[in-house]
Amino acid sequence: MKYVPPEDDSMDGVNFHTIFSIQKNPYSGKYVARFNPDTKTEMGSMAESLYFNSRDTLQHFLNYKVLPAMEPEACGELTGRLFDACLHDMSAAGEVEHTVLGFSAKRGDSGVALIPDLYAMQNYRGALKDPDPLEFKNKIDEFFFIGNYTGDGRPLHNKRAKFCRWALDKNWCHSFLSEINQVPPQVMADADPGYERYMHSPLPKKYQKMYKHLVSIDGNTAAWDRPVWIMNSNSVLWKQESDHVCWWSDLCQEGRHYMGFKDPEEIEAKWKSETDFTILIQNANSFVKNNLSEDAHVKRFMDVLVNGD
Image 1 (spheres, rainbow, N blue to C red):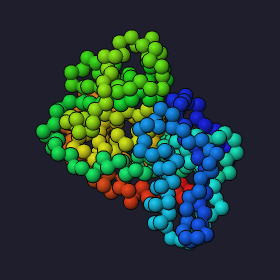
Image 2 (spheres, helix red, strand yellow):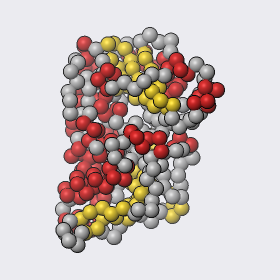
Image 3 (tube, rainbow, N blue to C red):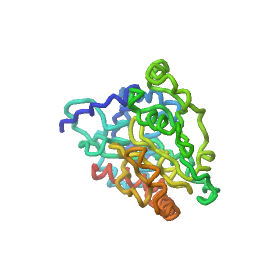
Image 4 (tube, rainbow, N blue to C red):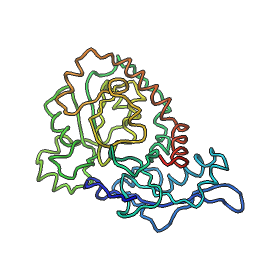
């Protein structure tokens, strides 16, 4: 299978690539994932945002969640195969003779089997455990977004930065970047001398959830945890259209589980439409409970290992 990485500079400085195999421990008789120590596992600017080293997270999830849930016979059939896990839909160019696993990918890309992302493997760091104490009707009827500068390295083309600039004169939409990483500050300043107008220190989720409408904009790849914890709350997820997907993205329906938009100019009309946001929130809550639990992610990984897609 010929696999060519996408022509996309948005992943510069953010890398994860490791190869593992399933082996039977001769002493315990249990099946475990063994990793090639020579493969690249740096996460660049994202390193500090993860609880564990990315390979440790993957190894822990496999050895303590996925493989113990599988029948020994199924594990035995996996021995001798190599699995290539990567941050995004990229791997070494050329002939790939083993299964390529990705946490996210561009829609339509072939050759990548999508597995749960690193946040999902950590059960979203407990973000789904606590119920949202605020009912929708008691929240601020405005929009809110905050996130790091990730994605397109050109400040005037970066979707998150563009959304922040668009929101500057909207008293009902508050949008901020919490950190400029992946581009030097001077590059940002040269492109947009006034960018500090939309800079803000990071805000805990409990403060963001004071707003009825929360926006998610993909960065380097599909946003992993933000759409999930928003759909688990009593706020509405507003998701900008993107070519990037996680394994569960196509199960989530626009207009039923979240509100979608391509251009920010579409938001106000959709906001003032006759959409019953309380029903949408109930659907979103159910979606997370039924499709994004730890058990659901374990099952997805099992299916990929066994079936390859």
